[in-house]
Length: 175
Figure 1 (spheres, rainbow, N blue to C red):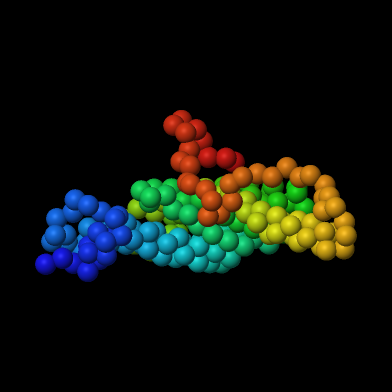
Figure 2: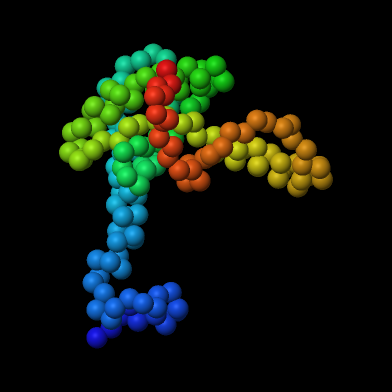
């Protein structure tokens, strides 16, 4: 007896050599893992925000929003994407202070009872600034302009488009 999903996948030509009695767990494994990491990303985003707001007492940390968390597939590292309001200098100070606070935050996340709390790496989320830039270009084009906007140095990657890069062997966390 063919499983319904197995039959559909076969009819679409996606699989050819699966036995006719494939266990459901094999068919759902990739989906389940991505759902699990998505739930973990959201849980960590909420908890990191709370820890920073309630327990991190560093005057260098200005107005910060945790916009996204991306956990690596092996759950050992996580990029914490933050949006910071302020001047370039203030943003730099805030990002450095957050990077120094991440070991404390990671320790506080131990209450989540995860098998392993991932190492946290702070990354600046520049999507709001990019969106504003795009809107200004569109506005100029709408009013008959050429869409010329001053060039800026953009740093990639952005949340959702990046993979988590664990630090190189022997490299220290940024301070």
